[in-house]
Image (cartoon, rainbow, N blue to C red; front, side):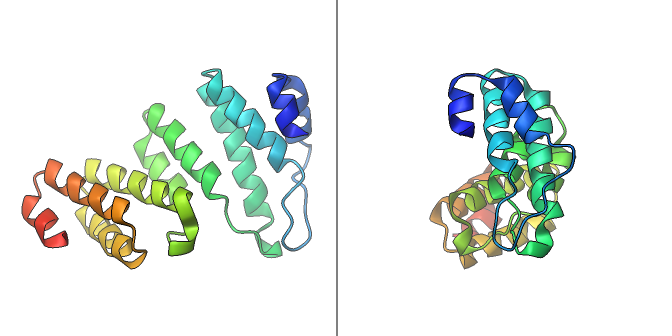
Length: 169
């Protein structure tokens, strides 16, 4: 239903169904009712170039997962990645790094986990936080992600750490 509202560009209805007065509490393993509407609303705001509104929707979606953590729901990696990208766009790299921290960086995390790892690496390299960067290097090897390993190697090389990049390979 949320997807069809987005196809109709029905921002008002998506907002009404996504921003409920209180975040829905759900049973174990269920996704909160407002999540599909918030996701489509956030994606639509991004498409329309309304970054602050998109960030607010992604934040509310993330909050929905956090409030239901006791029911066994994992943090939504997609919302964390989108929040981080928007925060980077709004020139808030420290906040973007905080937004990425909840994403589980394991082999099972899939594409969103790898994107989160690469974004974290970009932000840590810019901040010259090489201790945490090295931890990501180890993690990239543990999850057997060739694209992450290549990305981290390139970041090391670009930031004048060629020896470390060669050793990593």
